[in-house]
Image (cartoon, rainbow, N blue to C red):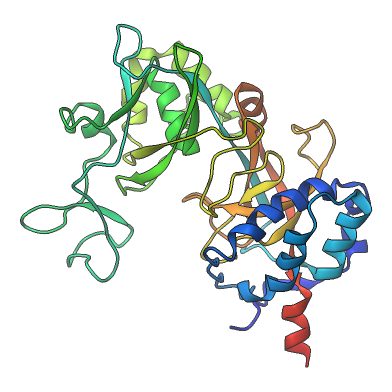
Length: 367
């Protein structure tokens, strides 16, 4: 597969802030992908960064456990070549995501009344091999019936109780808006009444397209588009509790979860690349275009929410999302808990993306 013309070769000297970045933190994140790679290789994205070209770099990463900054920087400069990623139009864009932490109960109580559900038995994967004629080609999940697959129940139907009685409830929350934002983020830490921390992560979805409440509220004239953040959306819902269902049910997509342990409180959930996310160092990308495990240097000078300095960091592609589409589009993992949510909720900034392409891939094409 040829390397896409969306990439143009640069040097590390072209990367603003490269000398000042914490390459050790980025190395630790990449090393997690390096250990997963022999278990199940990542699929090569359509832009042509061949997963096999990472073999030499990954082997060295597995062998070096605690490099200092100079060693980590030299590792990236030795194994990779930075390439500017051309956006489809305009500028590149970064947003933020995080892992919420909320109080929850394993049982329904007077306070905890909103369920998080596991995957129903009648939800099946759909692709071109089993999609009925006339079914929306976007749908990747459907409901299995005696007459064949049909579109699954949407958010409104599920929240009105169409799946009640199937014992799908993993945990119960106090607030519907908290549950919705857990659906948006795809994972959460749950603090149980006894103090125990548990985790839910994405298992499947009903399949319909995602429609964000920010877009809906903007179109209704409730929140100016430039003022739409997670915080402003939450504030609007708090002021208008009687309209929560009206707005949220316009997002027909519904997320189902599975339980997972919290093995390291410093790391996030295991995401699409099958490794725990690293706060401030893992980025979600368009997995159809890009290859998981690819390092990306992201230059977003107007983004200061992470550390009050212009965001210029080496990130590792370790997740994806249905809203993350295009070659120069990324979702930055901010971490877990409320403080991370305050960061993630305001991130929407123009950014330059530099993919660090394995030298082994370029050397092979230059021979």
